[in-house]
Image (cartoon, rainbow, N blue to C red; front, side, top):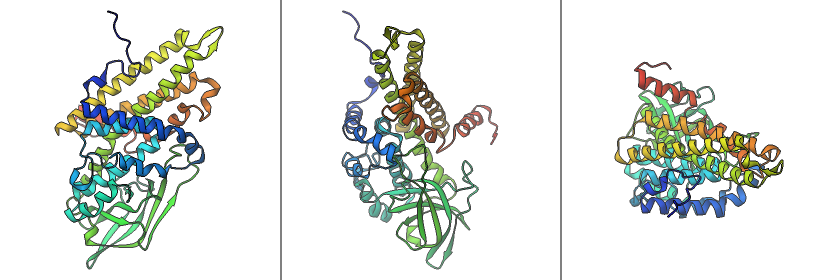
Amino acid sequence: MPAAALNPVDLYDVRSLLSEEERMVQDTVARFTDERVLPVIGECFDKSRFPVELIPEMAGLGLLGATLPHEYGCAGMNGVSYGLICQELERGDSGIRSFASVQSSLCMYPIHAYGSEAQRKQWLPQMAAGKVIGCFGLTEPHGGSDPANMKTHAKKDGGDWVINGAKMWITNGNLANIAIVWAQTDDGIQGFIVPTDIKGFTAQEIHKKMSLRASVTSALFFDNVRVPEANRLPNVKGLKGPLGCLTQARYGITWGPIGAAIACFTETTEYAKQRILFKRPLAANQAVQLKLADMARRITLAQLLSLQLGRLKDAGTMQPTQVSLAKWNNCRMAIDIARECRDILGGAGITTEHSPIRHALNLESVITYEGTETVHQLVVGREVTGINAF
């Protein structure tokens, strides 16, 4: 009996390593991406619009705070399932996955991990239902990769905290109902839940972006913003808090770019088989086959890397350096594939009627945010040498 044909985007049958529940999650989100995201995302990118109409559907599928417990209205999925959610959403667009990442890993996670039980009960069910949207205020205009150089500060005033400062490059900023804000205090860096309709808070959307155009990116400003002690996250102090959130989000980001790469690879392979040049399909050229084969190799390696990372996460043994290795590898893999696919498409590749240029532009942000490629390389370098080169 002849061997069954391999799936070009799953040459090592990674899907067979997934549980039945994990496959069901992937199939459900893949269907959502195919039916609801892909028909609108090109126009959203062109018009620089986030498709807010999809938020209730994402919530209905349990994609917001997916790994948090059922008792807070969340789906209680494992880490691999969350990774597959990120992969399938980013197959649609990095902006859609970014929305889910921020809501889940950067806003709901710290409330669950660092918040009080009252805070969990107040916010998590509403956030899981998509009725309250969050944003994550860490990065500052001057700070970038050095979050310890934080200027935003919170001063205790009686039973309240008064926050002053600014944050930059904040996904969901102008969509958000609450902001998870990290600020310097007399007792180290601490986190606060800040309602965005509070006096002294301003969100200013950033325009003229050439990347993540189907995503809301904002600057946040705090002018004597006063919040009660009940809004402080009580169970963490120092950079451990925000860095713990970033580890959760970076984990999802290791999966997301695989989806972007698969989208580019699939579309370009079909194009190359149908495009006739010099009386034969473009795919019949050795140079093109070598490029497509290399893409398949890189996608396969990235899939195995993230799956093992997910198994480590679910076993409770995942280390931040392992996340850095996967983000570095998989973002580099995806952006290189998107650029190569754009090249194979020729002139057609520069329009958003095809996905590679959109994914390539988006991935310029993904490879930068939540730790640049260089930062993650140095994290791995520090691990293997024992010497901090930052």
